[in-house]
Amino acid sequence: MNAVIRGTGACTPEKVLTNADFEKMVDTSDDWIVSRTGIKERRVVSSGESNSDLCFKAGQNALEMANISAEDLDMIIVGTVTPDYYLPSTAALVQDKLKALNSAAFDVVAACAGFLHGLSIARGFILNGNVKRVLVIGSEVLSRITDYTDRSTCVLFGDGAGAVVVEAEETGDQNGSGLLSSYLRADGSKKELLWIPIGGSTNPITPHNVEARERYIMMSGNEIYKLAVRAMCDAALRALDQVGINTEQISWLIPHQANIRIIEGVARRLKIPDRKVYLNIEKYGNTSAASVPIALDEANRKGMLKKGDYILMVAFGGGLTWGASLVRW
Ligand code: COA
Image 1 (tube, rainbow, N blue to C red):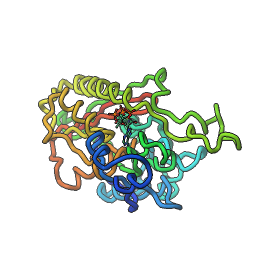
Image 2 (cartoon, helix red, strand yellow; image 1 turned 90 degrees about the horizontal axis):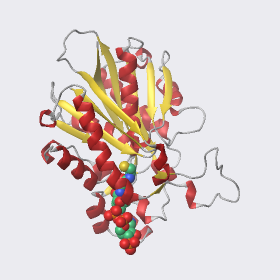
Image 3 (cartoon, helix red, strand yellow; image 1 turned 135 degrees about the horizontal axis):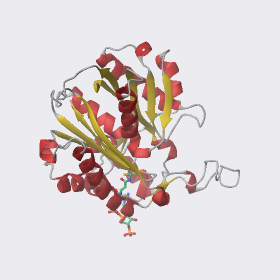
Image 4 (cartoon, rainbow, N blue to C red; image 1 turned 135 degrees about the vertical axis):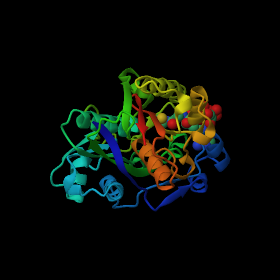
């Protein structure tokens, strides 16, 4: 049995925030942002636009490419840290919007690694023979949890959604297409390096703290930076090791688009040349769980992914959480 990606999709909001816009909001410059992060612009939702709206459109696009109807889905998994509500899950809202009448639905909270966690769960369910078709989405509206007075974080984040349809394929072909391996890890002891201290059940929003900066993303960027490179390289090598593939055999590295310098550091350590690294960070910034599936969909729709290609996806984020997945296209 293989778990094969049949279709990809994405949805990014229309509204664009450029570096020039940030020059008017905080003490920053286009030059600083581009040289430190690689980001030129990012998309943000407009009022009334929700995470589940983005998921719905990305999911529809992926289903259309896969030529699979929503009613044929057995499971919908949404990786997100910016759900529409605490209750219900965003995946349940997507199930309703898509009219996926025969589907289970749940969210996965693993920050920027959320999509890779979802993909790994989908693969497990499929290989166990429990389900046949899973829609895996990574989607965020980070603009709703970003402090637009904090120049060290606000320039980094954007909104968007990416999706894949994964389907079971009965085959004895060991060289067929499919999700080949995955490696996931976490380190909760470092939660304070990237978190939102208030607003959850430990420290609920009260009339006294409603204006506090702690209800937005707080990050120790420099420390995250160093940990991210090391962790993503380790996860990548472990995912490759599971199936005896080396980095020279990789056709595409599709990394979490957090910072151009992190991506370059990962590629350099893994000895993967620039031409094999898919980048779109300059257009979208860091969209957390959405960044890998948006990049995968872009590369796919541009015809850059060929049958038989080994595609390595890696991500790192708050939790801390990180992981890697290997796919043969
Ligand atoms: N514009 C101008 N100056 C800025 C700025 C901005 N937007 N943001 C921070 N600075 C300033 C800092 O205040 C600091 O000034 P100081 O030296 O006077 O104190 C200086 O730039 C250097 O700050 P530092 O945090 O050391 O910069 P950096 O080179 O580490 O880059 C990040 C900052 C956030 C871009 C970088 O650490 C990063 O990308 N980290 C990973 C973040 C990430 O991707 N997280 C998501 C999870 S994967």
